[in-house]
Amino acid sequence: MGETLSDTGKDQCDVLDSLRRGRPAAGQDPVKRSQIIDGARRVFIDKGFEAASMNDITREAGVSKGTIYVYFANKEELFEALIEEERGTIFKNMYDMLDRADDLRETLVKFGKVLSLKITSAKVIQAQRTVIGASDRIPDMGARFYERGPKRGHDKVAAFLNAAVERGLLEIDDVDLAAYQFTELCLAGLFRQCIFAYRTKAPSQDEIDHIVRSGVGMFLKAYGTERLAEEESHQMIALEAER
Image (cartoon, rainbow, N blue to C red; front, side, top):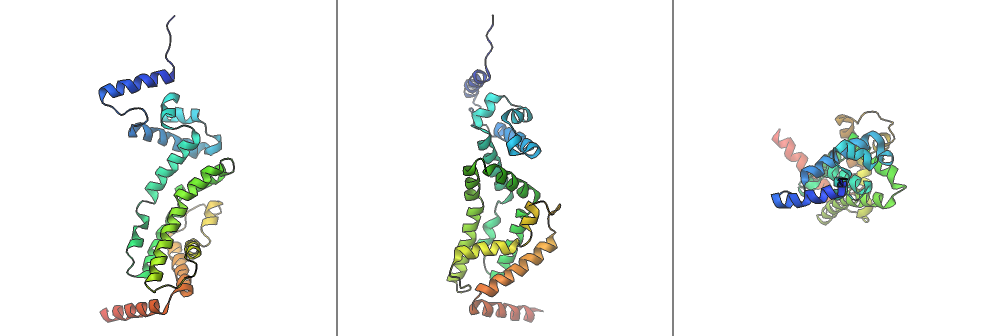
């Protein structure tokens, strides 16, 4: 009676064939990896993290179970890869504007508006809900999510504030705390309403603009120095002279 190769056996043959033909080895094909992640994205959105299974993802992605395990050891690893890909797409280059800080107030406003817009977007809210739901069972995954995303962003904001302190524009005793305060002010009343589905739609650009400008105003009243006030006064005089 003929013997049938298992999925794993087929995948091993595929690896040898790929090497002979100059194709990507197992686990190294970016197209196949993207195919799996796209399938996982649809399953996680439809079923949520807990209810989704690797069998569901296998069917949705159109790959064998052996293939999916060549790329990802388990559902948690696949979900983390999906989150990293989404984060890279959504937040790409967002912090670059903090490298150009000629006008402190306007830099904070521009950054705060982009931050608020992205954090309250449907994709980011959905991802955070999923991570929060999974973190109770897999706390390490929640910790990694925070370290690779929010914590890195926080550190960049803190570095920007430190530079402003060195320039004499801000006076802050606890820069780490101030960085958290700044982001909270830019999201005042928005994040919780979105995460708990109190809002059915993302906030408008006008609403975000109002909240961020108000938050930046409060932040600079608390931490701004006389030197900042002088610079802004000179900028105002220069603008009036141009009109």
